Image (spheres, rainbow, N blue to C red):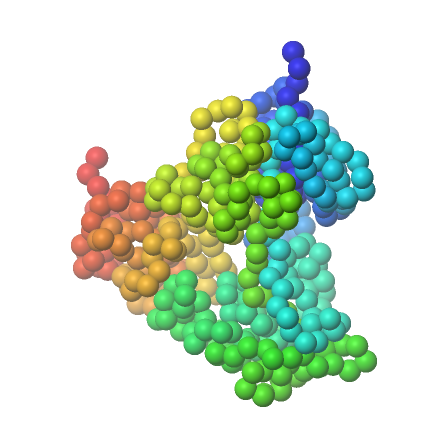
Length: 412
């Protein structure tokens, strides 16, 4: 019998997890993973947290032990990107000119840092943050402290990097377009709480503010000039203004796009035998009946598993709840649910918004659609059960710390 040839484009958590799942559940398939970076697949969340802070070794970011790929006969093509693919011919052309054929193809091309037309962005000392190499360079720059770091962007990555830089003893200033950091994601009350924690550790905020231009001397950045005309001294400027899905291959091949590569719940694209998963995929979610694109760890992990099973012909669907986590100074946060459903609603707070710990829930039509815990551990299971239950809950009981969350779950 002919052996199916499965090709994965992307060396992140999605691509690596897909390869592991394929080998576990489809032992006869031939697997090739194309990694544009010169190493094995790795995951990104630790890069801005525990790895950047020196609390984890580089092996902690690996999707699988390095030896696993050889032991499991998984071919890696590293240090070379895919340049194009032909859905009709079932062929991928690499940047170096070689072609790889496939029976089924997974596009796990992820996302790229958003670029903004900022004068002076070409100066030395100006960087974006996405890769392991970025994290290694940033750690080397920050580790001795005493540097002046300006963060442009007040989202999750900007706040995590600001926390890491300040922890190393650097002078950190953060610019953001919001009045309150993270307010769009978790609301103004909790966003203001995160700001206060950062300020207690020496981080300075300019909100709302944007960088109008960067100035330098001898080719290296020295100053960030804001839209209000303020000049902020800088030894390093980090542009953390979000990411955009890397759809270049898909667009050139004529796949259907909509805020990423449009896929169904089984992660099939509009082209036969072509699948997409991870940051780049805008997937139909069975819970909402709508398409959602997520840039978080859980989506990458579970998307890799579902894509692998779909490529093996199994009846698979990406139906897990979105989930992410962040660590900033002494704050540890976990969030499950649909930010798009929670948008514009006031959270129900259980406990006091403080470093001692609290929970927050977002409701739509009386039912929980998202839940978050800050410095409260081992509560994600009932939070997810509340969301999956899809039944109205009493906000007063939801806010009452004396009422166990399990008592609010649907009967049976």
